[in-house]
Length: 634
Image 1 (cartoon, rainbow, N blue to C red):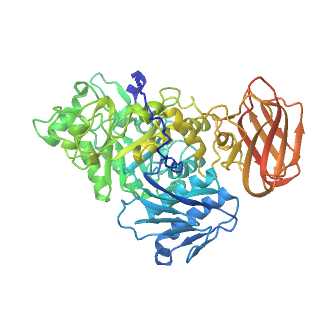
Image 2 (tube, rainbow, N blue to C red):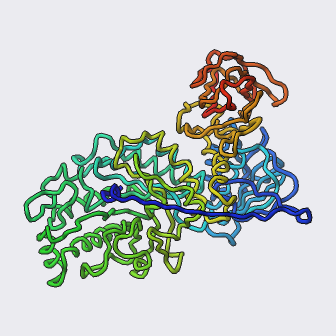
Image 3 (cartoon, helix red, strand yellow):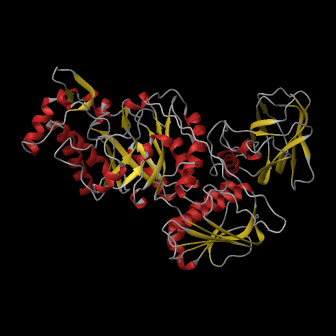
């Protein structure tokens, strides 16, 4: 998040009214497509259904076994985490209950797939990436139920880039958090993870060429290698950024001789002096050191919020005229640096990315090289169309609605879902050919790094990421309003194995199919009590009795249960287990529930299904749980 961001106040007031035609007796209503985030682009309902049972396997077409080996292995691990068992992978012909993976469909875009649901589920694509996204759809459907309605789907994205940026330069994010969000992005069919690795408060990469600039909290090269490898398995591209020539505080703290000084002699803490040879030596050392660490196609140079008043720095004008001719301006020093950096990146076979705010009209004799991808975040300088006309592809990284600022502005997710599209840039700008716009990310900026914890950030990103996933995938929206969309997003849940929020490793109920006797409104579905999100909850109707039931996927021994109540708690309730969801055995019973967080230990029992059965409410409201967690006896 840039300095100017703290001065901006963006208010978006949007009114939208949707009138739905009333049903008539003469017209049959087609079944709704299965609910996923993003929604399926095309769905044709069939008859019958698929049942995921204890013998279900992943069966790979022998003709594509080599191409799909990685996708099948990743899918098996995720499906096993969801089902609570090992899922077998083999090549051959699928039997009823199996899930088949194959290629050979050249009619779809690169990330597209077809899914056929009947006695088996078959995912067919033209590429491994397309097949992978088909497996994400299967995971989302099985997260909601072990039964999937029969039918056929064709699905593909509108935008090539969909994802998340985190400002690690200002706030160090743990490796575990990043791993969780690589899988979370993939679960939502998001495919880009932008690592903003240096900024005001930190330089976060181990360095052999300049260890003096590295912050105490940083990533080792092995950790980055492992993160990049995990991202590749999940078809997520990691885009690294070392921000230059501004926002270089931690680097310049170790190299004060490179600080840019104004004509009064005052040294900047964040701007490097582009007239000094040492600047280019240091930056080249870092770029050359790190380019091999990130095998993806991009390197982000930052290039945002450098000098605004060049008249204060006569050395920049002198450098520009010596390097670029007598007509050069001081701003040409900046443009020349951008192009010099671009040459380093291109020499490694990669494409340069930069922020848009430094590219203006008529302030220099140089222009940034065509081919540089420009990320448009605010209405400074050239418009998106002018950037495209200058030979750039653009990405819509507009403040509204993609900026998530710790302790500050947050994405307007209602406006995002109901009104915005990735082709609507900040300030109402558009480009004439939408193919010149690569896509959009959610941006987490950490100007106030202690304003939110990692768990709070994870919880705050749940709906912005899901709204962005829907809009960048570009399929028909499943419902008209954001209020209707949030229960769908909650029901889809998190990726298998998600441990964000308050739950602990080993939570048997996490992301398991969950049902309830009733819900207060659609905003408080049963699945919210097992999604690992401390900000979402299930709420029942205002009567007794009520129940919340979790399918653990297989018979499980239960030694501990944690109930995280909202204010509407259970005064009298039982914890029950069952092997068939029909006959129940009591695991625990109380008539003196206290609300808050109740940790019930020393339990002895087992079953596939776990149920909280409430018989007396503690308030006049219903029963409401932020989380129901279940743990084994180990």
